[in-house]
Amino acid sequence: TAGEGVLTVRSPRSPAAVELSPAACGLLGALASWTTPAELANDGGQGRAQVLRFLAAAGVLATGPEDDDLRQAQWHPRDLWLHAHSRGPRCTGRYGGTYAFTPRFGPVPADPPPFAGERIELPRPDLELLAKTDPSLTDTLERRRSLREHDPDAPITLTQLGELLYRTMRRRAVFTSPDGQELTDRPYPSGGSVHELEVYPLIVSCQGAEPGLWHYDTAGHALELVSPPAPAVRALVERARSAAQLTGDPQVVLTVTARFGRVMWKYETIGYSLVLKHVGVLYQTLYLAGTAMDLAVCALGGGDAADFALASGLDYLTEGSVGELIVGSRR
Image (cartoon, rainbow, N blue to C red; front, side, top):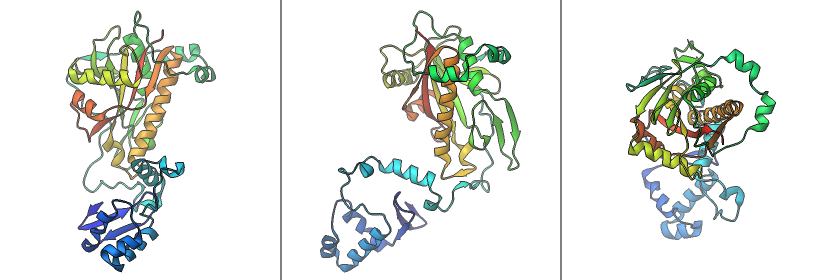
């Protein structure tokens, strides 16, 4: 990394940070391929060998090819970097709830700006009745499966989609913390109650709703049209279809996004790892509610945030997709 005129070299395997002077930066080119201290000394004198020993002591050098060592080879550098820095305070000078941006920026509000498209008010399910008629938690956990195939003759209904979103994503309360940030309460947990996640149902086939990309208003329990069917929206359907290895289109793709500033205004270094934790608990909440409702739910392992930005018109760095699930009626 470079900053304030200094080039810093770090490794996810070590808490050390090595600052290089301009004269030493040329050594990095020689380290782009495997070499030895002797070869470096012959090429640039003993000074280079001393710098190499210093880098090795700091833990920023790989000491040999790692392809024959699963313990080393299984880690992509980016994965290991995220793991080390989100799970090791010793790797960074600032960690956790540091409020790094409070001197320059105010907190991001709890609610995103509304979309100007068509709005559908969703029916609210009777939770007291559901508490009496739902299967038990144990039964739901045991029956939970990733179901990819949907019933084309009886697609999911708008009432079912609304119930699923109400039981998993709705905003139950909003309050202001002592630090001035608007916090919310939803059915699933969120670090610091920031609840940065949003859900965008991409409807392909749903009784009672037109196809297109919609946004779920967690406060008003309604759908807002983001985009009607368009090539960019279709690309999201195709990607979900491919990820799920389907022969036909899924009925609904739930794209989960994060309003990153909600988390990163408060949390430093661990912000993105917190987002991924929240995606995981939301996945399980959707799985359990969907299983109790006898719906087919299947979480997907990956998506394309650039495709979603194009389809939604949202800024990639402000709010981006971080997860996808497909939902529909069970065969």
